[in-house]
Amino acid sequence: MNIHSTAIIENGAQIAEGVTIGALAFIGGNVTIGSGTVIQHHASIGGHTVLGENNVVFPYACLGGQTQDLKYIGDLTGLEIGHHNIFREYVTIHSGTKEGSVTRIGHHNAFLAYSHVAHDCTLGNHIIMSSLAALAGYVRIGDYANIAWNSGVHQFCLIGDYAMLAGCSKAVMDILPFMLAEGQPAKTRYFNKINLQRHQFSQTDIDHVKNIHRILFHSKCNHSEALGQLKRYRQISNVYETVICAIESSQRGFC
Image (tube, rainbow, N blue to C red; front, top):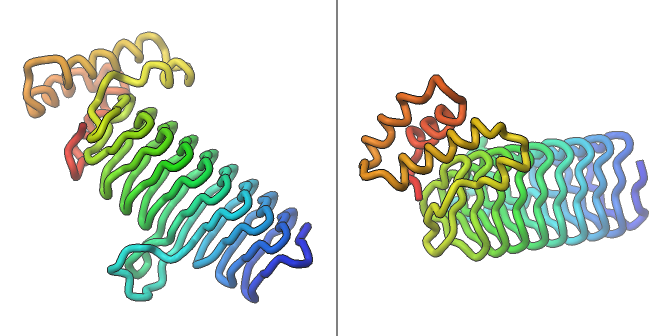
């Protein structure tokens, strides 16, 4: 381990081999840090936080802080973070609210400066949250999603796999997988074609996503009728099943 002499590490913290901790960083007594992780100067890791391997936490980031939910009454909650994530300057990620609840972050995500993840959120893998983007409590973010600069997401919303919320937008309803939403409040503008191409979706699957977008947003069907049409295609490609599941599990409806 490479730990600066001025770092503050409370008794009980579990730090694996190969961890680097910079000057004046703070590590709480209930924190576990996996091998290869780098905690830069003045960063703070607190609460009941598990931080996996090969993460990088930049200066002044604060992970595992107490929830801002005013319903919090001192219960034991936590934050679980996977591997190979990047937390840039002043990122804040909070623990859960109720007894036993946990905020969860997957692997290979990038949280840019000043972005915020509130209590009880669940984030997948390969997500990019740009600077000043913020999630309210209980938000779910799918794999390869992109939350652009200065955007906000209402509590209990879903941002689906490969979806994007454009810059300066406000999502108050779900954004379905593969879709691109923008505005205040956000509306689905098109499907996220660039993201699909970037991650090597076949042209056939891209065409299927285009068909999903047409059925949901450019047909004369209501939502129930559109969902029925999608179900006729569910055996053709997994992209149909992914969108159908997102619609059927939605708590707030979709943009």
